[in-house]
Length: 330
Ligand SMILES: C[S@@+](CC[C@H](N)C(=O)[O-])C[C@H]1O[C@@H](n2cnc3c(N)ncnc32)[C@H](O)[C@@H]1O
Image (cartoon, rainbow, N blue to C red; front, side, top):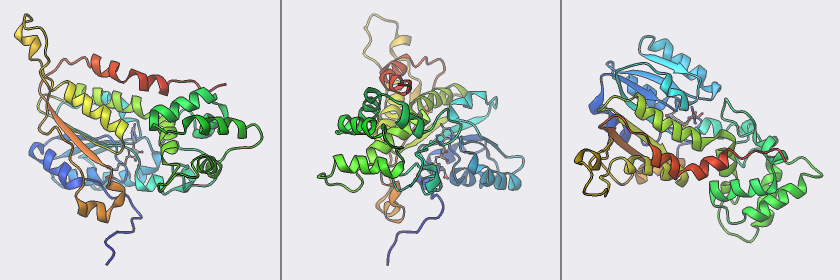
């Protein structure tokens, strides 16, 4: 028997694991920063003492949100906004802020959006509420900046020849999704591996959707709106996201080796309680029934104090934000 489900709809990743983390805090408001197909929100609303405030930048999920709203008028709110703006929430009884990063299967399998290298036609890649599309980047960005995006956002070994070929080819023709795939395959033709375009598409999606700034601002704002005792839980899907989340929790949950002459209150300042240093990953069974969960990692921490300024966090990843801010007009 083939255990893989043919998923028309998004299948919530690590749902049981997430519930086991947040359920001790049930009886309050949870912020679902990445509503998607609503898998997490629906599960949290099953407990009648919970409320959910959900965010998603993709307006196509509004119909799912409206349906959930019709059944939970008093307990559910949806905002078609980016999660970097969760600091607008004034609710005082927040118990947890949850991020399930990346894309839903519904988005990836909608080939008109050009998020996947299986798409045809216009290179779009916008998740929603964007300033520009991938088409703008591919037609207008300098070779040097394309190279930096490919190098820093996906560690693509062939970043240089790929960026060079894009700039050469666009002189004479429009580059659509299938052409970008051809370019990558022509350069990596002798390389093994399933999908040679994965890295280039990842890098472009990060740039087009400003995913680094969104994540960093989202995490900081999650901390700012959360009362002490609340939890932040984040599911990541690639190594850059995970590196950012890992640093965010670890940096502010460990005692620093400051000078022993400093007052104790400074040396022992902690803002998070981290129950597990290692991330939670999907079970072999979950990966079998939902292969796209295979790279998921869940990290979480409880807020234990106010007043963190996140200076080290912001400095640590400034180099990535700088790449996201590169201009694309040649
Ligand atoms: C992996 S899906 C979430 C799936 C959801 N947990 C479920 O169970 O159905 C990620 C969703 O987050 C949204 N998203 C990604 N980045 C966002 C951001 N910065 N602000 C708001 N929504 C975002 C995407 O549009 C997508 O719908």
